[in-house]
Length: 179
Image 1 (spheres, rainbow, N blue to C red):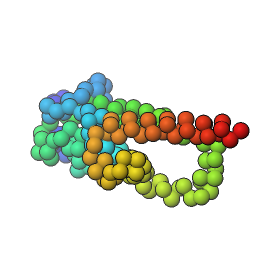
Image 2 (cartoon, helix red, strand yellow; image 1 turned 90 degrees about the vertical axis):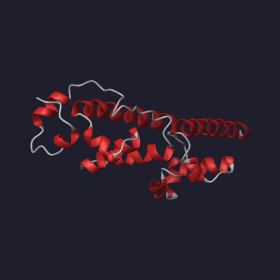
Image 3 (cartoon, rainbow, N blue to C red; image 1 turned 90 degrees about the horizontal axis):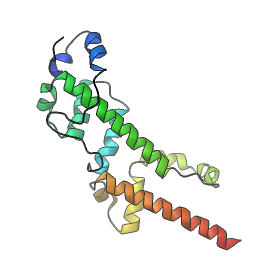
C-alpha cells in the first residue's frame, strides 16, 4: 500500500483497505508543515469549524476545514500524503471534542428558573448561539460583538467563564440577602 497524496486518495472508488490501515495511525498535530492551536484561532473561526464538523460530507468541505484550522491552501491540502492527513484529522477531531466538552462543562448553567426561561422562548435564541456570547461580552466591555469574534478563542472563552462565575456568585449573594 502506497502513501499516496490526498488528491489520489479522494479519487479512489474503494478506500476500504487504506481506511483500515490509516485509522490505526496515532494523532499528530502537523499538516503540511503547520500546526493547530485552537486557543489562538479567532473565536469566530473555531465556531465556524464546529458547525462545519457537523456536516462534513465532501472533500471540498474537508479541505475548507483544514484550510481554516491549519492555514493551508487548496493546493497544499490535496498535495499532502494521506497518512499525514489521517493523523492530523484524528488530532483535529480529538481537539474539537475536548474543546466542546470543556465549553459545555464550564459554560453550562442550571438555574432553578430555567423552566421559565424556556417558557419565555429561549429556544429561539439557539440560532444565534455563536454570537450571543459575543453580544454579552460586547455589552460588558463596550465593544462591537463581531470585533470580539476576531479575538483568540482562548481569550473569549476565559472571559465567558469568568463572567459566568461572577454571575453565579452575584445570583447566590442576591438570594442570601433576600432571606
